Image 1 (cartoon, one colour):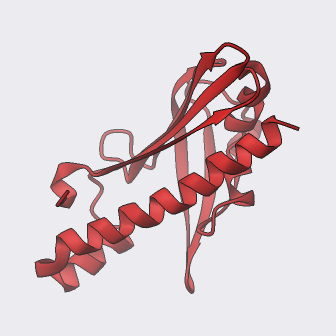
Image 2 (image 1 turned 30 degrees about the horizontal axis):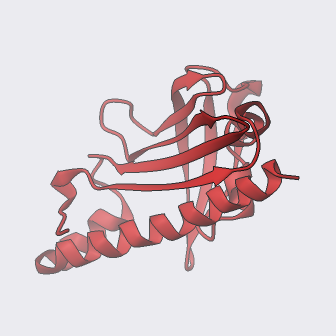
Length: 164
């Protein structure tokens, strides 16, 4: 599927976990946990002693090659044992929106992780496209594939932790 930034590209991955949602939930609402599995995401800390709840904020650090950057995220959807969603930077003009969703399936849980590229236009991805606009679709496809790889590692890591 050919995609441009204006399409708000989305990446989704999922995994079936041999554990109930109550066991998976603590892992998905820890914004630092994905750093154990992702090559790009380096970690997160709650701001001002916040805890997972609607409106809470955390600072995240990412690294790609030699480039390191930080962002501030706000929890924008939160329902215990169901969804943990955060919006990166500006709520009205986000860099991206991420979520974990849990779907109970008997004594198992389907974990879905999603990421949607936002409209904020001052990211490294936007700079790469500005330098090579005729290859926007290829650049976006590369980025979404990169997201999916890191996301899949993250959900597989959560599966392993949850099934212990």
